[in-house]
Length: 556
Image 1 (cartoon, rainbow, N blue to C red):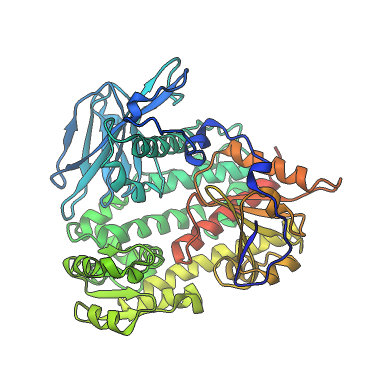
Image 2: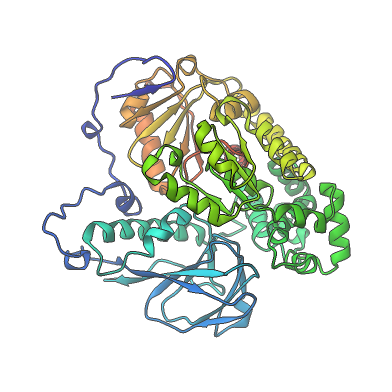
């Protein structure tokens, strides 16, 4: 059944999801199909697995490492993923110093079985790293290309899964172990996509620009020759399309990327201005300081003092705003914590132990706000009621970082202008229904509530279909239910790390359900996590839209 919130019900389909099932590939099986019969009991290791190549989760362990010192991990017969949740990390294969590469905080690094490696974490309080180990059993080999360096990739969900994985190993109960298996297959799937080799001769210009952007974002600390990046497509076209993608020239984009990366480093009490400058690719720290002040209106030393304030984000949405300012909250609580009366004292104790200078929260009861005020100054925001941009600017003012917030918003407006122009060129007032693709269901987003509507319909100029006016958001158990709404064209927001094959299946199914002999627009935007109403998520969404629209225009 369709479930409607913040609006009136539009039709009744009465269709159950099981009446039409999409066949999922192996990358989605562990994420979407948990209907295993585990009633026989025992550990997961005692339950038979299928034939062929199978991945087998072993364990995840946490290591506390000395900051800014190299640490060696010996070779093992297991494949491993390495991640540092809070600090950036240099990592290389022990056999080859030239394999040295950088992983930002929260990024995963794949280490093949049989490889010893050396890693060094940047300075900071209690630097830690996590190692997830697994086997690849059966016929064949793990289909990852040979790489001169460890493979580095991003997967936002890993931050939420880590605490759970640290408690699960091969001896765990079957239900827990299969949950770890699900996470493992999702991680490997993302790694496979990230490691897919790219040939510049085979890429369209939009793909090539994305390739150039990715190199700048991942290797901003190295010397890059922009003309070499543009060689295969012609510099004039490359520069034009690059500016259309980013709103900046390649050189301006590289500078902005380096300075943005420096924010998180400068916010770390263990990193000096000189170290931050060198880490992001500037050998002259004085030149870096002048550039930083010109762009943000404050010296890096002044920014460092302000950004090292300890901020408790008691509404998870706010973490994405702090991220855009270069800050990481000292504590962030899950949604609904303030309604959990049984654990209230436990949450308050956690907040006290975090020792915040500021507490940022959504609406609170008077009694809870009074208790929090005894810990640190409390600033509440009824964030559902007004624009995320206004809130982001308010955070900048509160934390003494108005120039950082203003610069970020200016860059975002430049990106939004590119997106608006491309939307006009590609769709010319064609109404698009916005459908979120989630684990287990679909969510239709209308125009009655803020969140996606103010960005996609209002700011970027997508045309809302008439049905959107009646909807806040609406959950559908199947694609057939979503397709029962009266609109032919659709923008799918993929809100978890689904495979490309699954997205193609959804597109084919939508076109079949809407078949009437007329062409249909099906645009896919990959977020890989649920949409949050904050600065970081809006930037990610606009970047994805711009890339996808350029890809539509490029000849195959």
